[in-house]
Length: 398
Ligand code: G3H
Ligand code: 13P
Ligand code: ZN
Image 1 (cartoon, rainbow, N blue to C red):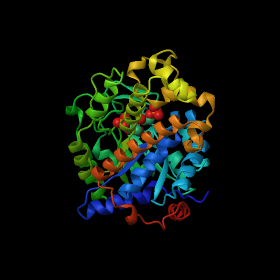
Image 2: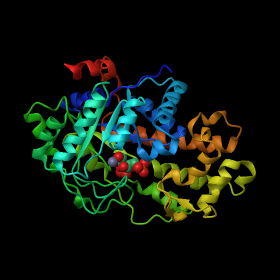
Image 3: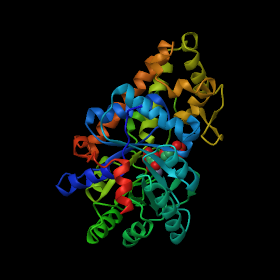
Image 4: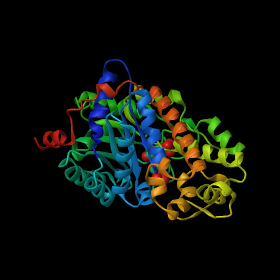
């Protein structure tokens, strides 16, 4: 396949350069699990003329049957769409094993999240991945401090904020290109009070990078940045959902964090909510859908509770509280993985094609809007496309 992937470094560099010129900006990093979602993200980036980071978690790689399958799926979507904006394929919240595996399987950047370890061990673990990844020009993100809530398989009761003074030290010692700094955000649709957010940590961390002239080479990342739009939650609940106590990071807070130095913004939950809203509405508008589409019939049974819903680790979830599409798409994966990995328009199932087109469109518009908010719209042409993975590897080797 001809499609090309870049390290996330030149993308964040373009955002930093724009920010230095008075146009605060950050690259959106969007989580992906299945084909229509990949096309939706790419379409949103295309409409915004934005660079972007497409990221897959360990859970996403497991869902598709391996990192190579995710890479295949993304390249296929890029080829089908003749997509030309510079993008990276990134591992989200990896461990040593998955990070090395993703470097081997063609990801162009990886995150090693060793934040559960103490600082010296976190730095050592991150450095091990840096040595492995940089040899191939692949970029590396570490994590410093702990986010509140559940982060992959790492559960943190409360946020442990990053110490801004230590951020340049962490980056210098580990050699990572980017660092997720915990400043009070959390994953998922129930983020709690905004009073937990301390953007001052970003301000001070970025000031430290600038003081050491590190800001064009090392970048700060904001996780848990979904805005959790009320309209989406209301739509889900109007069509059978029972989501309660939801809240996201307000737009003005995200913009402020970008103004203060965040250059990569992570979004997963907002896409999950958009996808779930589309499925819930469609199933509600088409009562006898199982007569038309076997695939949608299988999905409907999870929403109705007839097929028990499970989370990505196989634990039971209440069907009214479904947010993660993998919970209701898992039985489809079991029918045939191609349904969720290949171009869905080739299937002989008009209703499923219709709903996947709606998913694609919903994601595209949301991603486009976020790119405008992040200041990355129009930035695709500003990325130095001479910085290929080979060029990056040569630069790291110097
Ligand atoms: O870290 C959280 C991201 O939203 C990825 O979530 O591990 O459920 O795929 P996941
Ligand atoms: P959200 O749950 O806020 O979308 O955060 C996603 C994230 O940080 C992925 O690593
Ligand atoms: Zn995260």
